[in-house]
Length: 375
Image 1 (cartoon, rainbow, N blue to C red):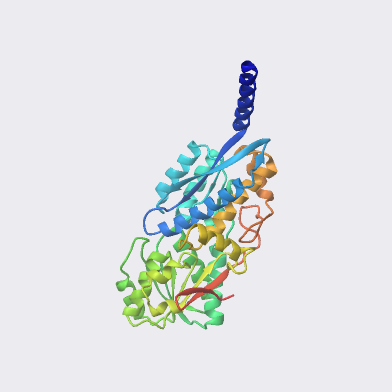
Image 2: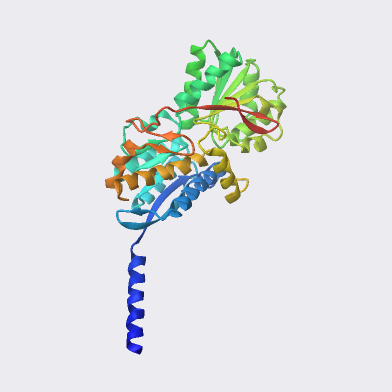
């Protein structure tokens, strides 16, 4: 009798072990700045991807006949291009199945070559410089409108809705900042707006008084800033200090955060901000408001801007794996080209070059310190 019980127990244990062995852990990488002045963006991005991983795992996915458990391997590129390349290589060496990221165009563009060379697909929901997709890598995908749409949309609004006649342009010399500012400048000039001054800074600067004083002498109706909110918030404070509280202030998605209201320190110029995002507003996203409630419950007071996109980007990778019935990048990467995925942000499908099909943009302003959609 004892022997029978022992044999039965051994059999049960063997079955349990076999079941456990069927679970395959698949790592998905995520990269964004998790340190420095842009860490609030990076953490928001990571949160979105992590939330997606949890939601996917809750469905008990089976791919290639195996139970799959996805794990997020999050890395910090500190918004630095060299660190971005190093982290990309680290993820290649770790043999992740795919990557969500990066956040900045300046880190994503050099990292894209690394991912291409090691054959791992990456989907960005934040990097907007059009140069990202120009090399034609089959591993690079973007689920957000690029700077051609953002810069042009802002210029049209400045000319047609606000009747801006004279504008000064500042950029932070990053791939993102220069890119979006360049598109805005070109389109603004085509719309008859005069560019009265161009100034440059960097993405670590904290004092803009000299730049803004020089611009003040040119008496522009508006300023366009190509860069991120850490610098834009300080500029808004310093514009008020210089008595420029009536000047309009334009920027792309890099300044279009909830954090800028805090960074501006109560500056009245915040009310003059018009910024753009490369998708629908949360209110118009497919299930956006319900998703945001879940996000806020998990990550109170951390929402910024891109987490819905990194959430969708994670699902897009897994959707391709499911359709290919494989988690091997060599097998499933080709399926990304056929993506037709109903995400939180939009219905996601790709152009042959990896750009999002039919991108939309949303313009925002700030009313009583709160980010408010204009369209």
